[in-house]
Each structure stands twice: as C-alpha cells, then as structure tokens.
Length: 347
Image (cartoon, rainbow, N blue to C red; front, side, top):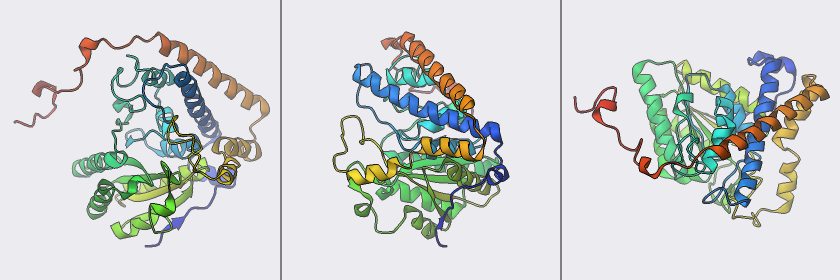
C-alpha cells in the first residue's frame, strides 16, 4: 500500500464537490485570521509578563489545523496539540477563553489549571493535551475503540508531530488501530524540526505517512499550507473511517515558522528554508486563492479583517477581567466520586 501524495486544490468547482460553499470558504479565512491573531497577541501578552511559563505557537500551521478542524463532524472528537490552535477556533472555542487560559485565569477552558496551552473543551469534542505529545494518540485510539464497540458513527482524530513519531505510544496506537480497523484519523503535523532535530535525523523513510502501510492502512501526504487540500484529504479520511474503512495517517507538511517556543530563536534553521516557506504562508496563500477563485472583493476582505480585530480586542479585555482561580478550588475536577460516574466501575 503506497503512500499517496495529494494534489493541490484548484477550481471553485472542485471545492464545491467536497462540500464547501462560498460562505464556508469565507469562514475558513476568518478562522485562519483569528488563529494567527490569537497567537500574535499571545506573544505580546508573554512579553508583558502576563503569561506564566513558556509560550508555544503554531505559526505556519494555520492551514493544516483549520483544514482538519473544518472537516470534522459535529459529533467527532479530537486531541489537538499546541501547534493546532486553528482546531480550537474552528470548533468554537471563544478567543477570550484562549487568552484567559494563556494568563491562567478562571475563564480559561481549564479554569486556570494546567499549562497555558494545555486546553480543550470536551463539550466541543476536544480533549486536553498532555505531554509528551504522542501521549494523546492512545487517548484518540481508545475513544475510537469505544465508538466501534458501541456502534457509534463517530470518528476520533489524534494529532502528533514528526519528532514524537519516534515514541512507542505512537507505534502502539497505530498498530492497534490498524488491527482493529478503528474509526480514527492520525494527523502528523510535520513541521520539519523536532525542536532542533531535522527530519533527516528523525526517520529514514521519505515520509512519516510511509509507515501507514506497515499498520495496514492508507498514508496520505498533503501540503499543510494549502488549507483546502488539507480539508479535502481530512474529510475523505474522516468519512472513510465513519463508514467502517478504518484509519488513515494524514501527514501535513509545513515548516515551524518560529522557534520551538518563545525562548528559542531557531538559529539552527537555514535562512533560505524560512524564506522558501514564508512564500507559502498559508494565510496569504488562501487570501490570494479567495480573490482569484472565489471572487472575494476588497470590501469583503476588509470587513472580515475588521471583524476579527474587533473580536480580538474585546476578547483580550474580557480575558483580562477574568479573575485568577481561588486557591481553595485547586482540587476541583481532579478526582471523581462514584456518584459522578455514569456507569460506576465498582458495580
């Protein structure tokens, strides 16, 4: 089973064939702008001393994150990571809650607990990441197993980076998913640098997706800066899983356009590499596509941009007003009583 390299999306007709209308296309652009705007303002908050700990972003990964998030069904679940802010935005996490999470405030999805980017909202089908990164793949695989046992037409999506693909939990998850033909899609954010380790020192195959054949399912490589191509391939994989076709390993090729975190200046990445991928900036690339293929006018673009700026300004103000959590509530949500369980394990 050879890996398949996805073609870029061309015409508007092709987009319509995969279920997107013009309003959907503009919404995707809005989500990409919100994603980048949130993380740009996160940098400012960090420099102001308002974000405790370090700070991680997914600049350059907006297309991959928003593309997959858009392809998920309303009842599907996922475990997005710190490079996948676009998934949270697309699924409906309010920007002010993201800023509140950054600052450790009560209004954040975890109520001021856990790391500043360790967040999710289970009501939106998103489950909070933990380190190390592929540790969420067994979680996604377990949810997919539950869906299969119950006969639910739901799909789990699990994210990981190309560096974390070297860990055992990534292998174990994909092996089990292949053996049991589970409704799960594995998304590799291949941003080419596992901290400072380049891909050629991380794995010996050409693509991470090449490994899928060994697990008995399809591997697909897609340009992660092409949001519509990512959406198309993610939608195919998700619907295939929903119909009983088993897992897919979707590898989204991007470049991490900033350091591993704010403390890292990424001096080890060749300047020419940054320049090459900057020319493929996913936000600018999609903006140009909308003008050329979807007839987005300058007035429409201005309206979207202005609306996003207003949302972000209001979100920052609201997050800043959110109080710090009461220390006495520290243990809240950590332990479950038997009464809290739908099906207590002791019965």
